[in-house]
Length: 168
Image (cartoon, rainbow, N blue to C red):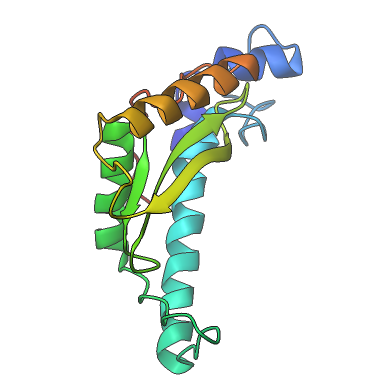
């Protein structure tokens, strides 16, 4: 109910061709393309999935793929929220030898016209020579590419820009 009473976005008005959309008998449930849903529902869904997967891992430890190191355990929601804050602060995600020893990666989010995350542009390389500095050459190139693609998709928020924090 609180979500429906928050000021409506121009994206919803444009998408649905409605100029004066406000909470009332005709508008109780937010529209599917409402970017406010992304900031409320997506974290709740992610949190539920993360917790369910953590329980599944405890009940059935994964043997992993032949020749690959075992996957690290999934973080608790609190630790995951810290990682999300880091991604929001830098506009990038990075992994320094965490998934596969000796391999590092960085990824920048790309958003569509509704502000929804639609893909990530990723760079991967050997940890010894791969620059994982938040302001390094790879980070700047990824952010620039993601911002360019997001702009072409009509994103209202440039990729890598600060995104409103939300916790479910």
